[in-house]
Image (cartoon, rainbow, N blue to C red; front, top):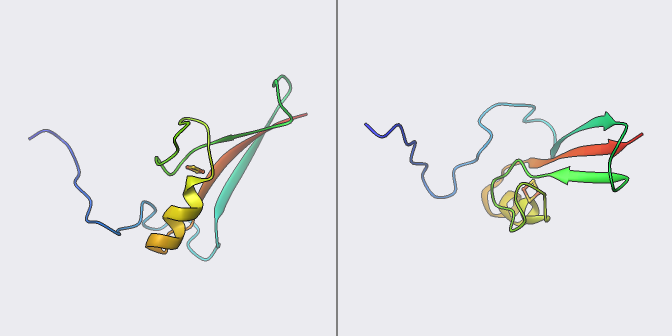
Length: 75
Ligand code: FES
């Protein structure tokens, strides 16, 4: 087998992590960043992957999912 997992259309990416939250967002504080806030995509739909471009909003609306970016924050 190829090891590929084929997901049905409309199936959420996130099966069980923090499903009571409207959107799962985590942040990591780092000392050196060019910008104060750098969001990294975790929904795999960003046009600027690995950076988040807000495409998770459309994905969440279409599927009922609750995924959001990883935010790297400049300290
Ligand atoms: Fe993927 Fe924002 S576009 S998390």
